Image 1: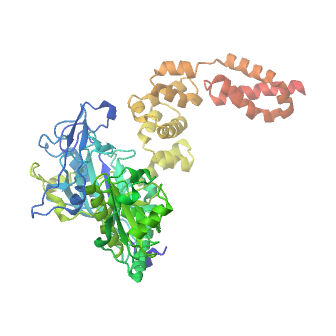
Image 2: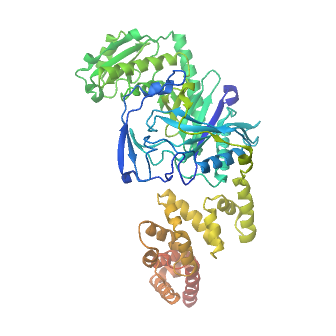
Length: 625
């Protein structure tokens, strides 16, 4: 797509958890727990509050369409502040200093006095019905090498993390209150690639502090996107950086297709009339459709001029019908049916014909069904269908959306307005004077550190430049440098920690707990001292992670094999495969190496095995000739 001609404009919000010892407004630890460890639970019904001007935020009103009971898990590491049963403690000074450090790295201007605000959120993610947030600094910059013409960081805020959803309307309070920095850019990006590069740069700056949490869920990207003739849409919670550009591409496609749909509807003279809503429960009293069969009330609306367009794809895996369904689901229904996709889902041709006749729908008309567990639910869903269908006549609605797998998106709620924010009266203001700002030290950027460290690794240890860069970029660099300082071979330390840590983490092994007790260093020292071979490192790691002691793991998985015993094993294998050896000659070395290594189960260094196998193989071949 020609994004310049399309008028694509985008900005991003980065939310990053800070690695502080305590939460933002209480002294509880920032440790995440297994939900099975929860020590109690309670529930809340949340309601929207009015702003100082007596207004209720439109996004909060949308959330109130359903009467929801939220359940919260508590732990021995959470307190009454998370429960919203005790006023917040003073703002965490460590978190504020870290936020100021990040602001200074972007050349921002701090606010002279920090005021905590309440941001209305009644989706269950906060027990209080609001999230505490404070503006810290303004007007930062993104280099022109990242965003052509230069980009702007508009604001940086310090806020509390939300509770983590366990499932449905159950939340865990271990995450609630973790300090979170929110970095918001101006709408200064005009291609998907620029958005991704800007997010990568901001993420690099954050990691340069060495004081941000790592792992899935600790950083989230929201992206605001619009095209010419479209509307601003906020897409929430993009956790995979590699998907960010794809999300932007798909939203540009969605808005383009919605504008084309609008033009098609207008040219057809399409209308949306609440007077075309009718009760069709009786039409489906003998239906085989499981969903309609259990419904207490089924309503239908005829949309003149919509036929063929409700089922048209607007982005991969999503249609206009999907958009309408998202709105209806806010009332608690499972979705909608429409005649562009029927007969299907147990609804027959004859039932569709009766429906169209009952609704007096012509060939150019689409009929949409909403089935509810009650008359109230069905009526609510049908009103939402009407709302979204009317929006289709205007083009692209302003809204907040969530990312789906692959990069497509679904409707969440309307964009929030100014009524969402109001002052927090339980937290005192904090002065950010010149003395405090001047005391903030700016750390070395990670990109500069990688250049410096990788150059040293190439010069001092003869690392391959690409491998040196990989090691210097690794989050485990401090452990690698410590291992080298303790006398471990640099290549062994680097390759082992980078490779094994990456593999084990991908497989779901808790690496951080193993590193916390120096399991990696103890294993490397065991290899250095000849107690085990490096080939057994991963297996020993896994055994220790499962609860085995390190000594027992080495004894079981890497028992000591003397040189004499190894020579005996090699001669035995060569004798058993004499024909193969004579046939392959020296080419037998590779296959036999694997046989010997399997026999000794990684308990001997591969270089030693290769040396002895080569020597014994030469003896056998010399005799044969």
